[in-house]
Amino acid sequence: LKEKNARSLWHPMAHPADSLNNPPTIVTGAEGVRIRDVDGHEVVDGVGGLWNVNLGFSCQPVKDAIARQLDVLPYYSTFRGTTNDVIIELSEVLREFYEPDGLTRAFYTSGGSDSVETALRLARQYHKVRGEAGRTKFLSLKKGYHGTHMGGASVNGNANFRTQYEPLLPGCYHIPAPYTYRNPFNETDPEKLSALCLQALEDEIAFQGAGTIAAMIMEPILGAGGVIVPHESFMPGVREICTKHGILLIADEVITAFGRSGSWTGSRHWGVQPDLMCTAKAITNGYFPFGAVMIAEHVAEVFEKDTSGAAAIGHGYTYSGHPVGAAAALACVAETLRLNVKDNAAARGAELYAGLQALQGKYEAIGDVRGGEGLMTAMELASDRGSKAPIDKQTIGTVQEVAYQNGAMVRVSGPNIILSPPLVLTSEDVQTILTALDAGFAAAAG
Ligand code: PMP
Image 1 (cartoon, rainbow, N blue to C red):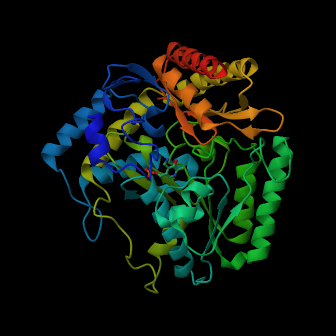
Image 2 (image 1 turned 90 degrees about the vertical axis):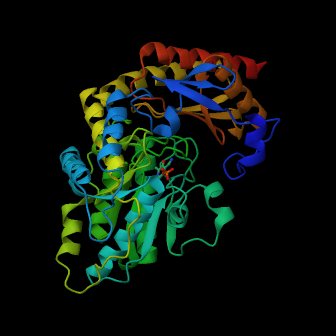
């Protein structure tokens, strides 16, 4: 398998180091919160698939629902004049789930990047339908991650996801993220930093002209950029500014929806109602590629009341509203609610966060520990705590490899080790991850 992988798969975009000498882990099985590799190792999946396997890998009701749906209606879309019974049922369930977020309508996609692309397009079209065609620009946060389509890459705030693909969409501007460990203001107090970032947002809007901006997109807690948890004043502040200037607020909740932050959605976590919400990942727990953009009633109404023709169809996917995805999502949402995974995420997340802080006390290489809100946690490694000089790749690689040998898969992203395990994790599993990381850091420290 290792030879065939090197010969026939094309990994460079995602795994530059892939070769026979440094092959990616070949996963051959999974059960509960554990994965098994081709060499027979069985480890706790500290990555939770890719932030998406909230319910673990053995969710029987979802498997049954998919199997049933395959027999009844394996495919029909919601694009161009058709819909289907399962997707209608799912939409009713989502309408109830998202009611506290003020979101009543769903548009379906095949994943997170599609959801972001849809939200960006929808935002521009919304303003056109309202006769404000000049509102075309997008604002987002530095360090934010919004998928890999050209629109998403354009609002992405991480250089490594942007620079190779330029020129990207014109009219996208990035605001400093409330990232206390490193920020242009040298501000370490979260509340003061939040105020400075909000002021930067106001300044950018004034500079661009509010009437030129379609939407602001943000993750309520930034994930792939290294788990940046804003101060509680930040997202409500963004909401207020967007409302004041007629700018739509898109919450990118591809990671945070369905309980990961310890609340059912990240927006709800901060007491904010966005205009649009991008979801994917845990909506089907990895069982089917699927996503949804949730839309506030006041946005949907603008399209439905349009008489100008500007709301005409120009967007949709072959797999929009896939019935098998809908069946998987229906079962996933039911399980998510039945198991009340948000509470376990909050409780296990607190244990994991405390454990990582204890490791920081022990190992000089851990410059910053972030998280504390559900099961989204990261450690930023530094070769020197004082100067915060970045860690070398070999050291962080050793931590990851030795942690794996000791029972836990963890994710490395730049200088960060990111932990986003399934939300059905037990305290014992948390300890397994911490013990494995302890071994990893001990080995790296030599
Ligand atoms: N937005 C966010 C916040 C994400 O974390 C991701 C995926 N990690 C995406 C969008 C893109 O989702 P996908 O990989 O399913 O296209």
